[in-house]
Image: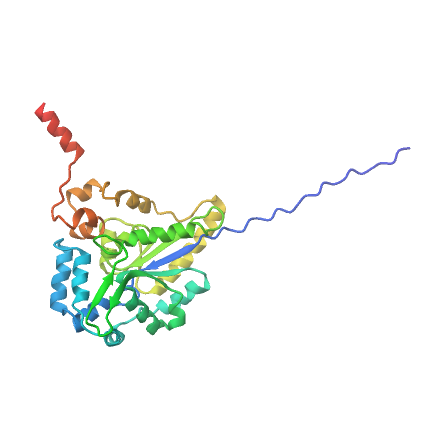
Amino acid sequence: MPIAITPPVPQVKAIIPEEPKKRKVICFSDFDGTIFMQDTGHILFDAHGCGSKRREILDEQIKNGERSFKEVSEEMWGSLNVPFDDGFEVMAETLEIDRDFQTFHKWCLANNIPFNVISAGLKPILRRVLDTFLGEEASSHIQIIANDAEIKEDGSEWKPIWRHDNELGHDKALSVNEARQEAEMTCEDGTVPLIVFIGDGVSDLPAAREADVLFARKGLRLEEYCIENKIKYHAYETFADIQAKLEEIRKEDEEKTAGRGMPAIFNPRANLWRRVSSKTAIPRFAVMSPSKEEKMFLWPEAYTELKTPQVELTEIGSLNSTVQA
């Protein structure tokens, strides 16, 4: 009689769920009015240069489109006549750092989040300020994306060395996008970097419009602009607010990325701005009634030379052709 043979039981391999993909988070922050409450340049100009009254006149010339940011800045920096170390003394006495920034920066380091300063100021000044207030070791972890400078030893000449050849001297939007492209090359499988921008003024818009997550300091011009133009943002009073929100966003981002296989945080405004920020694609509403600030900071190549932009509208041209016919 044949022996009954028990058929082999198929071996089932345990299915190990994939770990959530972690997107690379990169922080960019303005310097003056954001990390520090005061403007480093203004402190120097008022104490050792053109003075507060002349500076206010020059600031107004930028706002009303009479002169470019670069041209006015060169006059302001050129008005200084003080050795670097002596000029720094007044900054060290006057500057006030955001009370929660150092804790936030330590959090970034602990979570492998690159933190970059992006500024229209001068790199040697910003580095010296960070070295003094944070310590050189902590400061060394912060990349500064700003204009360089040539400063004579006796302080008789301060000359900005501009990052970019345009009316602003430093195209913050270009700098953010360059960092984004570099980060994409090092991101984990199929993920894209999450770009965070922190600012306070409307001059931050060129960089802010490229961000996936935007933080604007409460009560200042960048927040007002976001409200007026229905731009999504997160308000903050100190960097503690930013840290708490980023922790929340990172957790949500990881959960949704794992569940859908796609980024959780996506800012369609960023793509919109990338399309319309070109001088060949200025949106019609801005052409018809641009604000002074939009003229200067959104499309400097198109607006800084002319107070009243001359624009041909296709619809108007078509209408004229019809009337003549």
